[in-house]
Image (cartoon, rainbow, N blue to C red; front, side, top):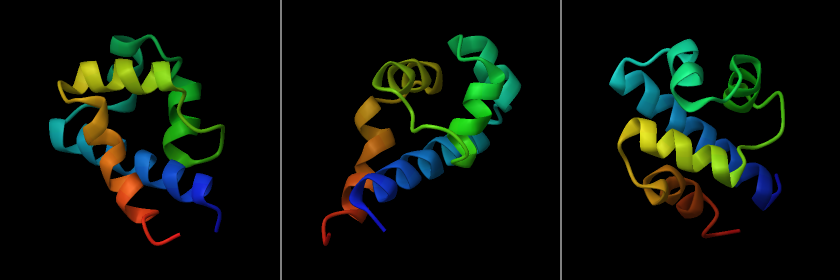
Length: 81
């Protein structure tokens, strides 16, 4: 598995976890961030392109967490690659 794939999977996993922990649905997240629901769904399932940096920023703001918190686990997963 490529480093880029590992990073994308890690970020998707962390955002899904944060949404779940906050009790925020994909529909609500889409409405609050301005990311179209179909795009957000594809990003979260891995059936589309990875999150854009701008999308990470709006997701982090909505989740009231630093962007770094969304990517730190993904970075750790690639440390041995």
